[in-house]
Picture 1 (cartoon, rainbow, N blue to C red):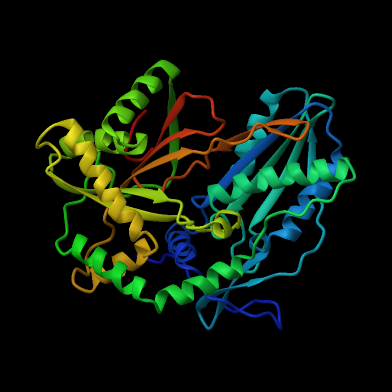
Picture 2: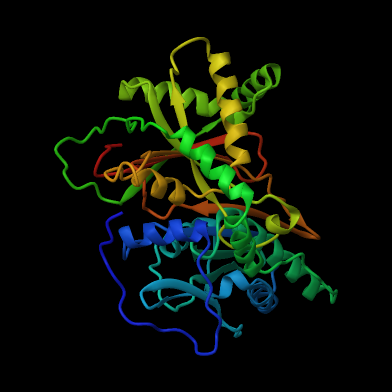
Length: 415
């Protein structure tokens, strides 16, 4: 990885214990260095509560969640040029409020927030904004840097805010299932010294004992030497009838919907790249138990899926092969992608990456009511793309349809 910018000096709170970054955080840190000064690592989520919403109670609920979840209070610093982190003390903070007349006015607010540029060193890596239409709705807009949270965590946060809001409003006691991100930091230390780490390392060394060619969807813009990080999103919706047929096919053939789509895209990408041995990246949850699934913070790991001979045999066989590959990968998912690359580069120093196409599949089945509050969750694209193209397949609010979004670098692809 080429580091374009280096931070100088050490700034951190005295008497605070410093911790190593976890492997998922390290991957984000390296991306942050490569795309310094951009919003490539921003995640923006909004939760819209319908009906009459008390502004002051909502602010209090948001503050409660930041106090209860220490991952929000992570500050990143450099200690003798080594990146570390500490947990800052909770301090009540003010939240900006915008008063609007319709939900359509919130879209531009979300876009502006998603493109907010954080100061990475020793600063808060989150920000909230509330948009309120009196008597109709209130929208919580939360933007974070990926160093402190992933998309699963932000889904938890929206639910926790609403639970806090209900408990304050109804004078009830709310004891959330929240855990410290420090527990995950400690568990990673144990993992690195475990037999499982050795087994995982061996699995990935065997998977990439030889190095495949890098797959690509050919660019429609020619002659560009420097590919920019700036990106656009094009999306469409697969209606419920098509999704129902896909689900029936998957049930009949005992494969997951994710494996179905991964098999389809592997055929396409293999053919347009004109290669038969390549890698597609995909993010995985990397949360193995109840405690981790109820901890806010950055856990997601991106894994490289290697495809070989995708055009041999039937589609059903390919989909079954993908399912088998994923079973093996999930057993060894804790070994970070960054560690895989480091191992490979000991033998192949000129390998920049194993893939430049990423496919993400997210079915969150998010709740739409909490107590007497009806709400919905939405995500806002940050305008950047680390890979040449990210393909996002998702259903955030359990609608039964599927959205397919293509995030593509505008320096390489035309609309």
